[in-house]
Image (cartoon, rainbow, N blue to C red; front, side):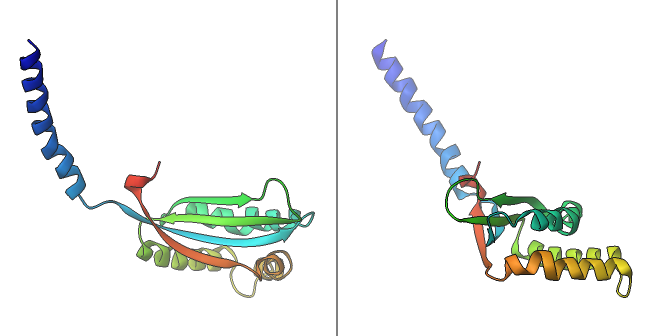
Length: 148
């Protein structure tokens, strides 16, 4: 009886190996992450949050090139509030298509020469750029076999 169990186990291992090898031969799905980090001094983030909610979230949610997006804020400790925009794309080309989509969306929603555009440009100058002047950008790749 014990010998037949060893034979059965050996056969199962042999049968299992091609599936394992086949899985490793497949090209992994690779995604592109764009991570932008910056700081917002403590107590000064409310206007920035309003800007994000008005000018960043709507086109991001409408953009078919963005697979996922997060606006993350520092939660606890330290004297500065770190913040991150984290966007996921199917590829680097998807990021480039997203830039076009975002630009077109902005021009459609806030046409040149309109009061809406003037307000958007003023908000960008006053409520966004002061906090964004020290930002850094990282483009990374993610092997989705190693992601959850």
